[in-house]
Length: 404
Image: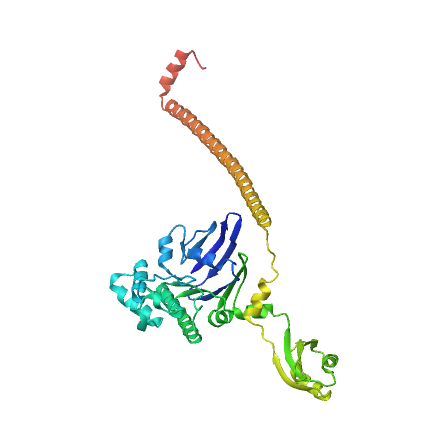
């Protein structure tokens, strides 16, 4: 439904987005994650056709934003960050205006506006001016403006910012319901929310795509090791020594000492089945386990591990990489030209050989016709001679001077 191909956005010497590629399939709800300034909003603005890429192209439902921008925009409902609304319009007037901008047919407009109001829970405030609304209701109005007319694609930039917990849950459920009829791309800083709503996550950092996968796979891939958090009562300080008795324990680290004299440890393990053995060994060493829980890797952990310590390219390094890319492209063009020249030479050679063979065949055919004609002429002479009477032959002989 959305295909971003080799897209770069450059402002002078600064690369907001550099050579990114990804695809979003029909009916998917995809989270778009990144730190502030990573390139999320720039990418979304390019998908919607609000700004043009410096390089590359974006296809929406098979249509290029360059070649068919109106067709692309007609299929997208966009909720921008910051909730930009017309302050002197009522809620219903604003949504109606958005329906006009999307060219919703006049006969369908009333029903489309009503449906958008109902889906976002705005019926009670539909006649209020947008400037009088709370932040949460303004967020809903912006979302209603995006979904009016049932566009195939919804692009939502921070859809739950400013909402109270109850509203957040309602909006999450609403977004989940979009899966039936819409493809949804969501930008959010609330990673737990993305993990609950989205079936796929795209992470961008410093203008480059870092990862594309399901939240579960990202959490699993970035988890360095399995670990447990264990709180113990250990008056003899023997807990760290149980590592020698249990083979499945890799390392034991003291996290903190609590005010009640208990201690919290992080235990790195190679197998989850080690917990039963730990209880047995601790009981033998007079150690009381008060709490034991497995540490689960979250999307937040995965995100931090993927984006931390990534190299910060200077403009000089980016220009160098761009130059190297251009050189490589020129080399590839030259290789193709050489290949085409070689193919052209071979084609010319084959064409000459074909023409030569044709000429020789024509010459042989001409000679064969000439020989055939000569043979027919001689045969005709012989035939005429054989038909003359004997006396005529004698006279001819006399006239010609005897028996020559």
